[in-house]
Length: 212
Ligand SMILES: [Zn+2]
Ligand SMILES: [Zn+2]
Image 1 (cartoon, rainbow, N blue to C red):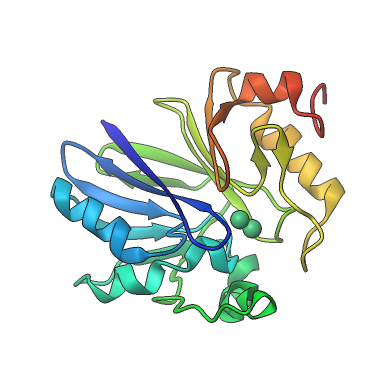
Image 2: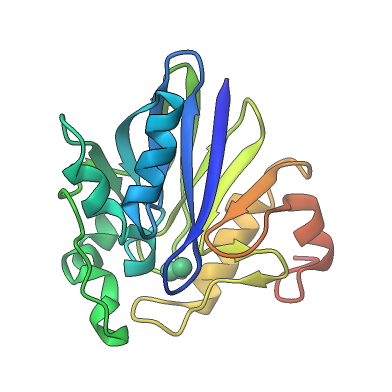
């Protein structure tokens, strides 16, 4: 069964999600935003082994805790990211623009590809390529429990910024329409910032994209 522990951490109040298959205790972190020791402690307390770091995109506030997590793990966790965001990852996630110099942790070695299936224990995740906020942004959907980790694509009542390098409004809207609004209405959306919401709720009332 999929278990989810969420954290809101760092200078941009970014949500990190520690997830595990409660039977096998295999764990991953989706967007290890900041303060890796806090995420690590939560995993250790539960007897979970973090084997993977999965990034929706490479902005500094989504990967700022990766170094501290990896430093405490042996073997190192495997890092997955869409290749279009590798340049951003190498540039420290753009943190210098805001005065942050992060430890980005291990190099990404797994390339997210649209339609790719990943397994954590017996739980299957589907990768959906959703550019617009960055050129390599992806979301992770778990069909069995209808949960979608949607990064900075869409938030409760808002959408991701498109004014950073690589951002594009039309592309963002297309990604939301084709990759989020096609999921079942009851699907829980767990975003990179702010509270969780559902596909149905955003279709109905999101002031930027409702009714699309
Ligand atoms: Zn971002
Ligand atoms: Zn963000």
